[in-house]
Length: 176
Image (cartoon, rainbow, N blue to C red; front, side):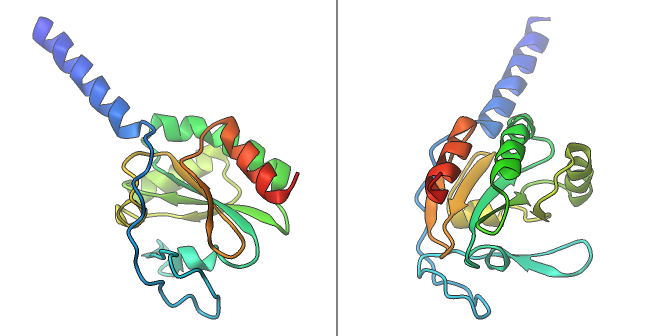
C-alpha cells in the first residue's frame, strides 16, 4: 500500500512539474524564415505546421502584420493550460480588434484532442494545432502554458506571463 501511495505521489509531482511555470531560457539566435512580404526583426524565430486540412500555417502568418499578438502555447491535457483559458478569453474580449489578437498553438498534443478542447472551451481566436515540440525548441520554453506577447513588428514585448499579468501586459502595450 505504501508503494502504491508513493507511486501516485510521484506521478502527481511529475505532472505538476511538466505543466508548471518556469522562467524561459533565452531563445536561440536563428535567421528569420522568409516571412512572405513581411519585414520581421532579425531575431524573430518562425516555424510552420501542416494543419489537419492540409494547409500550412506559420507563426509569421499572424505575427508582424501590424497588431499585437498574444501567443498561447498550450496542450489539451495540461490542467494549468486549461485553467489559463479564462484569463486569455477575458483579455481577448476586452482588447480584440484592429490592434490586438490572440493565437493559440497546441504543442505536444494529439491533433484530435486539441480540436476537441478548442470546441469544448469555445475558443474564438486563431489556432495552430499539431505543432509538436518545434515551438518549445525554437523559443526555449520547457513548461506550458507559455505565453508571448509580440509587438506589431514581431519583437517580443512580454513572455512567460500568466493570470492578471496577461491583461496588464496587453493594456500597457496598447497604452490603455
